[in-house]
Amino acid sequence: MFLNQSVAAAEVVQRQLDAYNARDIDALMATYADDVEHFEFPATPVASGAAQVRERLHVRLQEPSLHAQLLGRTAMGNLVIDHELVTRDFPEGRGTVELIAMYEVQGEKIVCAWFKFGAKRLDAQQP
Image: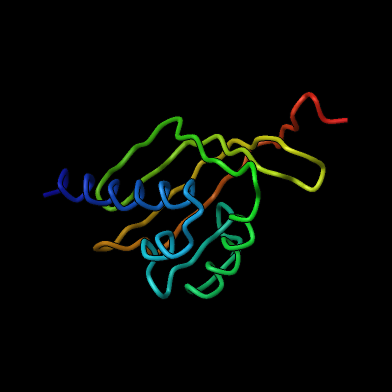
């Protein structure tokens, strides 16, 4: 049962990642519960509820260079931890940020997510 729960949770998170990279806000939001919460690790709230998460992600999905590369994934029960390298269009220019994202999945929905960001690195060709 535990292994099946881990596989199911990882599948939900993969759908979330695929929708993020496709910039498909509706498919992305379909992976989140209505009362989902997002935190900057460990406990700083950044969005509460589907409406706030949608608003936050809608802005992010407008970035032309946006792409999350999965570097590794661990799943145990209903928790999934992704290690990613995300390409972004920062105010200072295009670059990357490494992050750890931890997702709590219940059923077919992400109910909570925590994000731990590494250092922002701007592309070398930026002035």
